[in-house]
Length: 123
Image 1 (tube, rainbow, N blue to C red):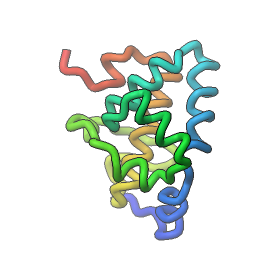
Image 2 (cartoon, rainbow, N blue to C red):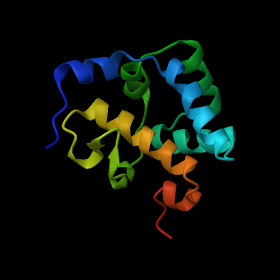
Image 3 (tube, one colour):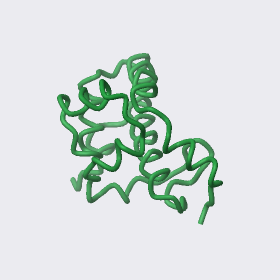
Image 4 (cartoon, helix red, strand yellow):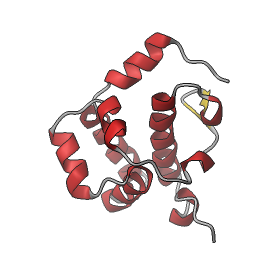
């Protein structure tokens, strides 16, 4: 197991989703991807449609609240690899793991991966 410190996990939990979201948008748009594609990826992972996502952004929720309200996709465990220096599948804190799932999906979108691959479709 890859351990993150208690402080690291608390910092992740208290980060505000609305403050990170614009960075996701900038990252994917710089690479020619659309906000609709970003929302598709977020909805796949969390179950949040665009309206719910907008409510959460306007509510300035923390990542902890964001993921407590999410219904994580049953194939999310297929998201593997290293992001922000951590191997996702080895993270021992569930919330930190979910945040890194989202980071990894946004990263894959920005890198031009096909949507079927990003959404772990069984094709």
